[in-house]
Image: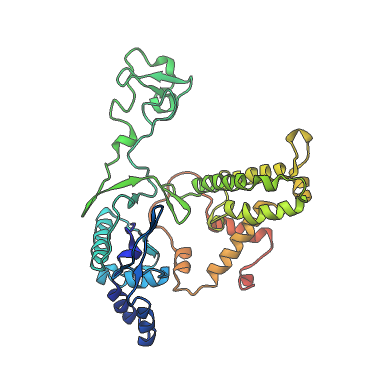
Length: 388
C-alpha cells in the first residue's frame, strides 16, 4: 500500500494526538509544534521563485519514525500494526494475509484509518502479490511462444490446429511429437492447462481494482511469488554494473595503483551488489554474483581470460577477499544480530516462525537457516558464540 504525498497531507493536530497517545512529554510536543508556527514555503522553478505562501498541512522535515507514530495510531482496533504481518515504513505499508477475505478486511480497515488522518492511498502504486502461486497472466516470449505457457519453443514441439501456436513436447501431453496427427489440439485449447484451471484471483476494494503482480520491489529488495532470492540477485547485479560504468574511468585507470582501485570497488560497487544479501539463501542463481565480481576484478587488473590467470591470483593482486566469503560473513553477522534480540521482538518471531501446510514433493529447498548452519560448521562456530 502506497500513500500519495504522505508527508504533505499529515494534519498537524494529528501529530499532537499521536504523540500524546505514545506518552511523549508535553514539553517535547510543544517544542515540535513550535517548528510549524507561521510556517511558509516557496516554489522554485526555471522561471523564478514564487511568493511565500502559508502551509497549514504537512510535516516537512518529519522523520520516518515520527511519521509512523502519527499514522499507526490512526487505525483503531484493526489499524494497529501486528508485528511483521503489517509493516509500515515511511509512506509504504505491507499487509500480509492468509485469505482473500482477511486481505480485503485489512486493506479497507487501513484505508479508512489513513483517510481519517487526512491521507490518501495511491491506488495505481498499490500492488497485490500472491506467494507460492503465479498470477493467471501469461507473458509470451520469443518468435514462437508456447501455446500453454508462453515460453519460446524449439525443434521438439508440435503445432496446435486450435490456436495455431506451437507447443512444447513436455506441455503437449504426448510421448512423441511425431504421433500428434493432423488435428492435434494443445491442452490450453482443450481446457486442460493447469494455469487455466486455477481460480481467477482479483482484488476489488473501495476505490477501484488493485493490480496482481508476480514480483515487486520493496525498499530496494525484489520480492517474488516464489519467495526466493534469485530475482533479487539479478537486480543487484544489474545495479552493480550500472555503478561500475559510472566510475569505470577511475577503476581502469592504470596511473592509480591497483590495490587503491580495488578499495574503491569494495567501497562503491560491492556494497551495491551485496545489498540485502545477508538474508539470502545461497543457490546457483545467487552464485552468479561471483561471476560478476570476477569480471569486475579482471577488468580492473586488465587480465583477460586468454592470459590463463586464476581468479584466486587476480584477487591476490587486488588484495580483496572472495565475495562469497564476504556474503557469508555478513550473513553470520546478521544471524547474530537476530539471535541477540528479545524473544518478543519482530525479528525473533520471524526467524522462529513455521509455515503451516503440507510441503510439496521433491527435494527440500535451500533455506536461509540451513545456509547459516552450514556457514557455522565451516567456521567451527557454535551457538555459544552469537554474543561475540
